Length: 351
Image (cartoon, rainbow, N blue to C red; front, side, top):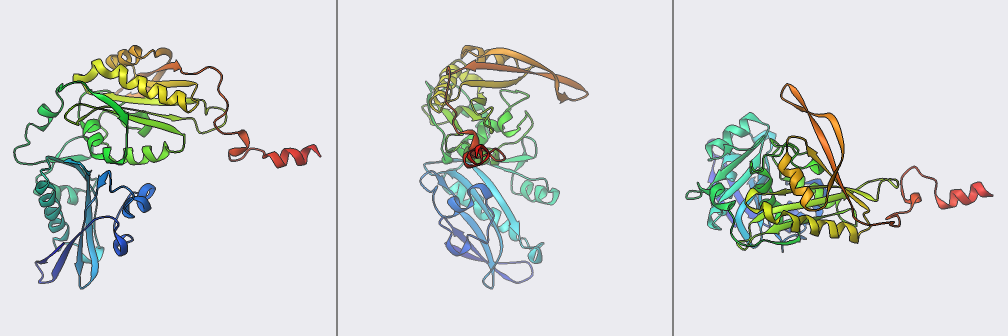
């Protein structure tokens, strides 16, 4: 799909909407390095709908951006990789592409779009298109009629079920983690996210790290298919701590009573891949988070003094842990790890 827009200087901008696989455009647009080949090659199309809006002048790509929504649930999206070629800036190209993206999002009955920026010029552009500052350096656009998005989305709407997370959960998890409640200071230690840290690419990087037995990620979904909880764990990266996994979780207050089911599913998954001990880091001020961990059998094991800087003061971090398995075999043998002596080297020394 394409349209032609005349720029302020008289040039003609061809606006293309292209969906993965991107073919010849794959090396001309932005994408997360961790998943670039898979996403742009079309490996995620069953779970993630990712239209790219590309601007061309005389056949040359001069700008692009994209948004990400679940393939089968397009109400919440994340805009990423807004870029204009440096030789074509100040022509209104990014604004035209943003307008096209928002129009397409609204055609699919989208309600909320999230993005982030550290660029004040970009920030002004997004404000002109209806985005307002939300969490950290993040911004959000609400469609007309969706002004009550937060109030309506995060209420209890029936019993939630737990399932494995997948790539299509990116937008919904962005909404969950960018919601101010619960206001936990240490929001997600696995991705170094705090209360005022916006969240989206964090999920992409984490989910990729957890593949091939390195961890697990589960989500809790209510009957309206809104994600109301999430729990993830990642095992240690050395031979010596591979049996220990750091875990994080988030549950909206309306579903706090269902948190135990979510955590138990994550605990079982950890046991299935040979994790012996799960541990959760909790800011000492977040007593409700500690209480939720306690319902799933976690107990305080340590208090780390003054581990977090808070305004002009300090905050302790509590370590809660739970034993999942008894003796477990190594997930990977010691000579699999960088810098350790290999089997053939042991044999050579023995000679």
